[in-house]
Length: 114
Length: 114
Image (cartoon, rainbow over all chains, first blue to last red; front, side):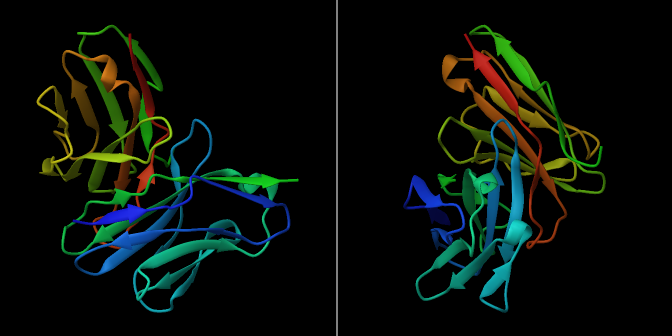
C-alpha cells in the first residue's frame, strides 16, 4: 500500500527567504504526486502535481516541487516566501497499482515571519 | 457556484443520534471522495464513488458509517448512533476520472458530537 511522510510538523522561514517543505513517499507501482494547501476553516486547495516527465514541476502561487525517484521524495519549494504563504501543506500520493485512492501525509504547518 | 459544496458547514449533535452530511460535487466530475480530518492530522480516506457505485469503501471505520450517491451526483454520508470519537471535519472532494486528475475539495462539515 502507498504511504506518505512529511518529516517536519512545522517550518518557519523569514519573508523573502526560500522555503522547502519536505515529502517522502512509498508506493509499489508508479507514483502520482500532489501538493495541497489548507487555509484556516477551508478545504484543501490543489497546488501542483507530478505525473511524468520533467522532475521539476511548477504550480500555483509561485510554488514548485522537485521529484526525486531515487530518494522517493517530492519536496515543495518557493524561491521567495510571502507572509500570505503561511498555511498547512499536505503532500498526497496515488499509486497506479491501487486504483484511484489518494493517501495524504500528516501535513506541515508553514509560518512565514515578516 | 463552480466548486464543491458541502452542507451543513457545522453540525452539533448528541451522542447516539443520526446525522447526514451532504456533498454536491463539481458538475461533470464522476469521481467523488469522502475524507475525515481530525485536528492536526491529514485527511483520512473513507470512501470513493465512481458514478453511482462505491468503488472503494475500505476506509469506513465501522458499519455505523454509510454513504450513497444514487444519481451519480450529490452524495450523502450517513452516520448512525454517533459517538464522541466521530467528531471531526468531514471533507468531500470530486474529480475527473483520470489517474492524474487532482481532487477538488469542499470546505468541509465540522461535526461535533456532545
